[in-house]
Image 1 (cartoon, one colour):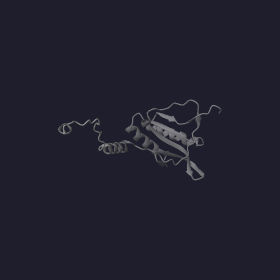
Image 2 (cartoon, helix red, strand yellow):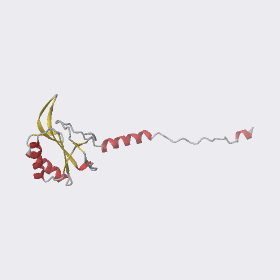
Image 3 (cartoon, one colour):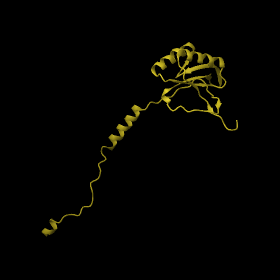
Image 4 (cartoon, helix red, strand yellow):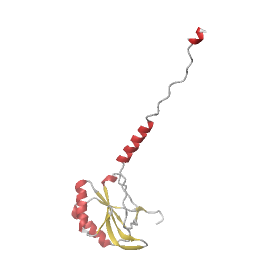
Length: 152
């Protein structure tokens, strides 16, 4: 009888890993990504159907790019006159482009202005924008386009 009492039990089970802190870790990671992620989305107020090009170069450093949109104003089914948009704002006075881009150039000296010009935009407006960009000192300019299809 005494030998049964002192007999050791054969326990092959190992203690489990505690998962009590797992929800805390997941919640902290979720908050970290929510705080550190920047969602940028521009509300386009002008139409930009980009022209096609055969030789395209991709810019890897997207943070250096500031977009400038030129195209007809979206007005439902109808298209308005050619307008200029920087970030989320339509630019009424073309001379304001100079000040806006100069300010951006001061903040980011390696600024690249990417112009997204609708294929039916007035060339006079594009020339005026180029002159204002030149006056602002933003000389790194590229023109966005779509890849040309092989048959066209």
